[in-house]
Structures are given as C-alpha cells and as structure tokens.
Length: 173
Image 1 (spheres, rainbow, N blue to C red):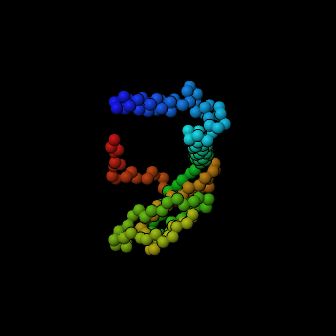
Image 2: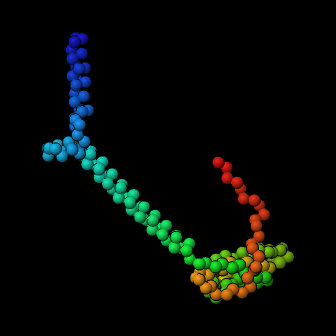
Image 3: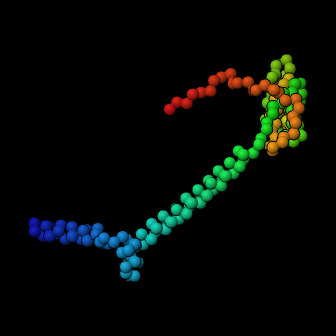
C-alpha cells in the first residue's frame, strides 16, 4: 500500500514537472508559433490576450502623453503672451468698470461700514463691468489686457495690493 502511494506521488510530481516546463527554453510566443495546432491551447490563448492588453495599454499611454504634451504646449504659449493687469480703485459708486481694451477679471468691495449699508450684493458681472445692488464706499476692479501694446489705463492705483493680515499656513510634512 505504501509503495502505491509513493508511485502516485512520483507520477504527480513528474506530471507537474512536465507541465511546468512545457515550453523548454523557448518563449511562449516561440512555442505557440512553432506548431499551428498549439494555437488553440490555453497557454497560447492566454498569451495572445496578454499581448493584446499590453499593446492596447501602450497605445493608450502614448495617447495620454500626446494629450499632455499638447496641453503643455498650449500652456507655454499662454505664458508667453504679454498680459498687463491694472487695479482701479473707485469710491462711492454702484458699478466698477474697465477701460476700453481691458477685460474685467476681478471685482471686490474693499471698504464698507454699517452706516453706509454694510456689504453690498454683487448683482451682475460681465467682461467690462460689475454692478452692486447699492452704492458702495470703495470697490477695486482688476482689469487685464493682452498684447504687446496695451491701451492706456485711467484711474489706476499706483501702490501694490496690501499683504494679507493673516500669515499663510506652513505646510506640515
């Protein structure tokens, strides 16, 4: 009985070794292409599926890099443009406007009091002006123009914008 068990174990080990070393020193692709009848074996089918996934993944990665390179070129072109921005400070007004040739990029009520009505509600914004629901004490309008020779700007604040009162948070690593 014991000898039968030993022979069974030896037979299983021999079969496992034969299956594990089925292709010899050849690659799976070489082994599958060596004989046309091997094309329908499971190992060849699995190899074909794996190669299809690998090639489709490679083409997808190339496509993504192409899109990323195009986006980088577009960003480089945008950064090369000559953009001039000005901040206009207007007092006691309901609307903040930009000079001709400039595009409105920001509109902020910078000064208000309770006696004057507090914060106003921004009613409308377009490329040239922003309107509030009531008169505001002070509004800062940020206007930008693109090109080598921007049009002259009027009523421009000459000083730099104030630094924020609260310090920026330090990143924690």
